[in-house]
Amino acid sequence: MSLQGLWEDGPPITFVDHYFSHLGNAVFLSPFDRCAVLTLDGRGEKHTGLLARVEGTDIEVLHEVMFPHSLGLFYGAVTQFLGYRPDGDEWKVMALASFVSGNNEFYPPMRELVSTDERGGFSLALEYFEHFTFWDRRLYSDRFEERFGNPRAGDEPLDERHNKIAAAAQLVF
Image 1: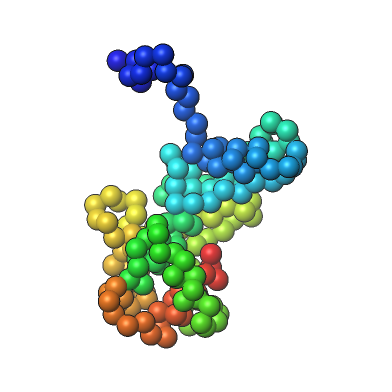
Image 2: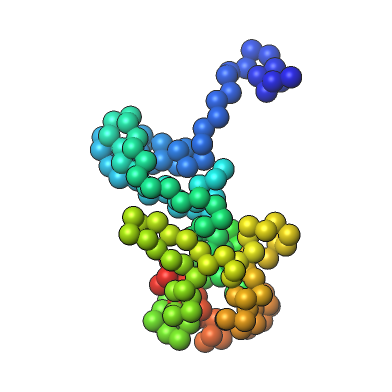
């Protein structure tokens, strides 16, 4: 049975790629006929980043980043490490980051977790993350803990180290 057969007289069902739906929503509802679009989030079907040039309805993809390399999941891992709920509480990490400079002792090791290339792409040092293994609900690895110390329990008081880790992550992002 096809999906179309679930609803008699229903409209046709059309698959739209996650990242192109973001792009379409941003561009085709805007007043611009020509623009550049950057979409970043945790992940879609396979993308985690998309850079495109749009002119009218013509879309030229300039660069794509594929799962498991994801700035959204990088930030989610830091969010979880700091005792918050990933994919929901990232705003709290952004707020923590405002209390101290990101250029602190945690910045150099945090910077090593994200590599960039000359085309504007990025990749994660995957040995510090678990989001792609699907074995555990934890987004960061034991190696992340070795590098940044013990994770914060959600009910544990915040301290300067937590602020510095948040600020370093924000600066890297």
